Length: 486
Ligand code: ADP
Image (cartoon, rainbow, N blue to C red; front, side, top):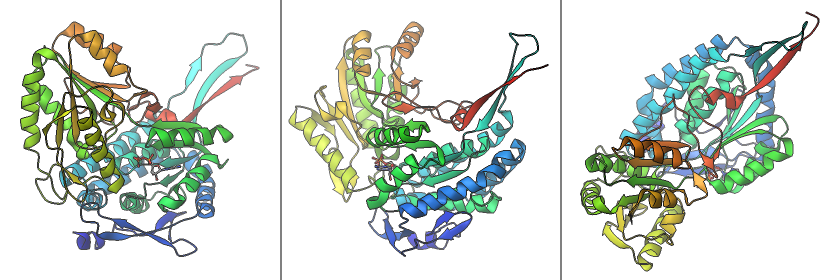
């Protein structure tokens, strides 16, 4: 309950800048609501542009010492942070469910998942190897070292209030960068709880800052983070629309940029698939977080020979999903994040119906922003559900005949984050995996993300990779040293 969250030591209602918990200088606050009940959970400071600029200054001030620290020591502090998060899993999960609505089992899972990035990069801190390049001239030697890029601005969304922060902050801190985090206005308390634990872990003042504000000031603050010359790196997860704005703003100071943007994931079921496994993968991929993840299956392409069987079995599995308040045990689908999200899902279902789709299951708004998990049949490519990221618990089914046709439909989009397909033909597995224009492919698997593998997209889904041994490169720059007179 909200009362028990408020009693948690981790529930902080102030921004965290330069090792201090601060209110807005003008005293203004912004309420945060539980999307399941619309109850107010608490408030956060509405920091203004100049206060965000001051946070950037403190990150800059903390940078020299943090970046010169022995990597192993930075790793040890990250490990402390990891241990504290692990000790406080339940409080963190409760705070997350209250502010973003996802079922508690998923929040608990996200804390473990998010924390795996801190553990991983605590270890990777020690492995930022350089190169020694064989010389081309007598008397010269060539070295390459990696150094932290500098102050990094991290702008994160509400759908993974913990993991989208740790997946950026952990590699940044491991590389030797200091950070200013701007969490989504909907889900600031998960971010502030992470800051509280970072402080307890002994991460020095100014190294990790969390700035909160309102929807009204988001664009102004985003612009400050993207244009302030003291910020050398911007990492953003969110919509392609906002990603484009930030990328163009970053051009003014040629910042290094990482973007994790929208997807339009195909989920292809071929005639030779294990249909039961495909149904299981489809449920996991589509209905996690009520369909509000950037890697959620968006379009289900099913080959004619298994279309009926898949559709029947998928429908049965969908009908067993339990909708409700995320803090009740057993609930699998919580509310959508806000009224806009709910309106968008409603209008997409209506558009599909108007253009001839059949509602095979669900289709209704239950109360507030709770939607029935929905299955649409006879979907065509002119419908909104085919072109846009749905971000809700709605699965559209398409029938196709040939492998070539499926690949063509799957690739017919401007974005390319995750793609999934089910097949047991080894030749097809390689052909299709190579042909799909996506950054990540799940073959006979609906859940693909973990800390050791590179997460990221191609085309308008973004730039750069998070997690894995590549993730730390996003926060590092190479320096080539040519040593003469040897
Ligand atoms: P979503 O549709 O998932 O909310 P957004 O891209 O709108 O995706 O939001 C993701 C993050 O980007 C949030 O932290 C939000 O506050 C922030 N944001 C939204 N608009 C802007 C903007 N114009 N400039 C900078 N950040 C923004």
